[in-house]
Amino acid sequence: MKKIEFTREEKAEIISRIRQYFDRELDPIGVLPAEFLLDFFAEEIGPYFYNRGLRDAHAAFLKKMEDFGEEIYLLEREGEKKDR
Image (cartoon, rainbow, N blue to C red; front, side):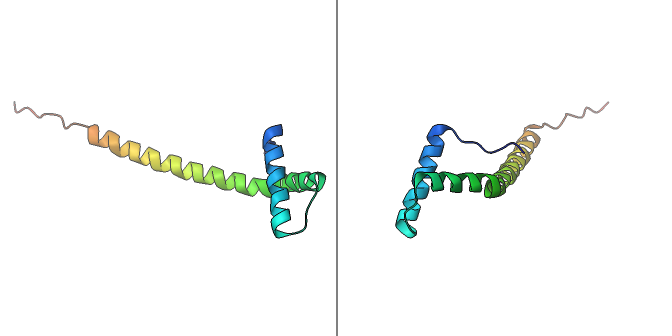
């Protein structure tokens, strides 16, 4: 699996949120420890969220394909039978 990476802006936002959480719920945390925590989550826990997202996307895709198949079936027309 490809490593989960964030843009500089995304990483700054995530680190800010981690620090806010620590300030609110635990003890204040510095930028560097928050960055290490983000890296840990991205490497160790991120794949679980990523895989769940893939499974959810796959299920949604299959549902849409099923709906699409039903729509095509509804468009089918019965051929006329001619008596000869």
